[in-house]
Length: 274
Image 1 (tube, one colour):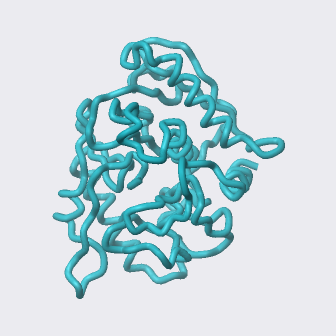
Image 2 (cartoon, one colour):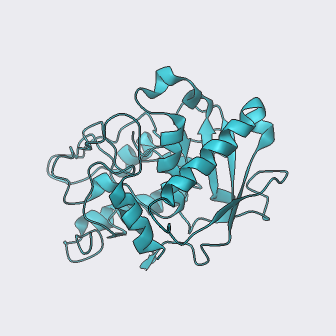
Image 3 (tube, one colour):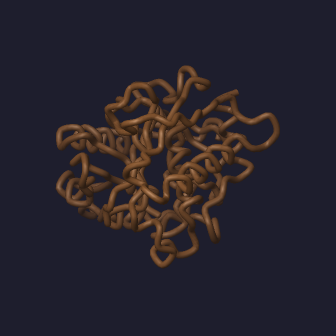
């Protein structure tokens, strides 16, 4: 998938004597979101400008230089983002609101409202459900300047990704779930559906990282799979079938067919939001 924003590019390897990729390779592999001009790297992660992209690259370089005693090690075992040495999750998980832009989605608006709600319900499945509540608000304008909601969902026509999302620590201007029109064509998606993709993307909005970057994943091809930092903590044992795991491009995932939330994904959601 490549970071489920599924950027259709892959980071390439560095020189044989230096682990990871160079800054020039990292920058060249990033896509530019056509509406806001933000950089999208590793499939669906966002940097507001070139300066921030460089910061993300430096964090990546620093993290791969660390030994296994720091973040990104097997401690508990879904994985959640860490930002400034704190677990990146919602401080008030019952106050999360969002809107779906009626203007950009047009005749698909009701369909997208239902798909987003279904994806969020999937994360709350399994008994009592995790301790968070996302509330749909019908408000206008539904864009990243609307501070009456926590985030917005909009459409664009990028050819670079199917969808992209954000982590909880992002500023309001970057808290958007963006769906590209190319995701409406089943011929582009293979075994996936837009509903499955949204389950992955909305996992990011809860703070969850890509499962395939874990050190337990012995089947990941470092030359073709995503390059990411170790700023995360484990919530569950490694799950190669997780909705947050890329199954292709050498990432070692075992999930077949559409992207689906697993029992371990639900367990991780309960750990993060007990």
